[in-house]
Figure (cartoon, rainbow, N blue to C red):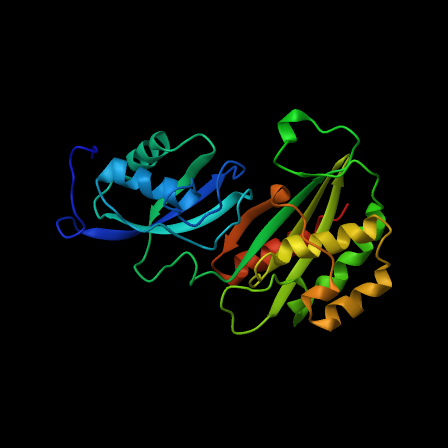
Length: 275
C-alpha cells in the first residue's frame, strides 16, 4: 500500500503486530516521540504513515534514553490485517533512516503488548579501555583511556545480583513506580582485548539503573571505590550514596524476554560466558 492510498483506522480492519528493532541512537533524542526532535518512536510512526497511510502508536517495550542503542528492542503496532509481512518489512525499512532497522515484523495475538507482556530484559554496556579510540566506535561505547582493573570489576559484579532494593541506582525523580525492588538474575563482565562488555539480565529496570550500576563498577576498576564499600552503597537505598551515571553512548537494549524459559536460557548463557 502506498502513501497515496490513505486509509483511516476506521476504514481498515487492523491487527496486532510485533516489531523487533535495532538502532544506533546517537543522533536521536531517545525512544519517546517528540514534536520537534528526532526520536526512534517518531521515526517508526512516520514510516507506518508513509507505508500504510495510518497514524498508529508504535508502543515500545521501554523508553531508551537519548544516545542509547538497541540490538533487540520490541514494539507493538496496529497494522492492516491482511498485510504481506515480508513486503511490509521491506517497505518500512525503506522508509526509515539507516540507523534504524526493523528485523522482524510478525502478526501476534491481540493480547500481546511489547511492554506489558515482557518477563524481563537484557542490557549490554560497552566500554573501550585503550588510550586510542577507533573512529568507528565513537558514540557507540564509553571511552575510558586509563587502564581499568577488570578483575576487580568482575569480582564486584555478584554484589548486584539478586532480589533487592536498587534505590541507590535509580535516577530521582523517576517515572511512576510502585517499588524500587528488582530481581537481577545475572550480571557478567567479559573482556575481548580492549573492549569490555557488561551483560545484565533482570525482571525489570529502574530509570538509568544500568548506567548507574556500571558507573559504580567502573569506580571499582579505577581504584576509587573499594569493593567492600558496595554493600553499604546498596544498603543505603539512596541515590546520593552511589557514584554518578555512565554515559548513554555505551548502553544497548540487547533483548526482551516474553517467556520464562527463554529468559532462563539467557541467564544460563550469561553465567557460563565469563572470561
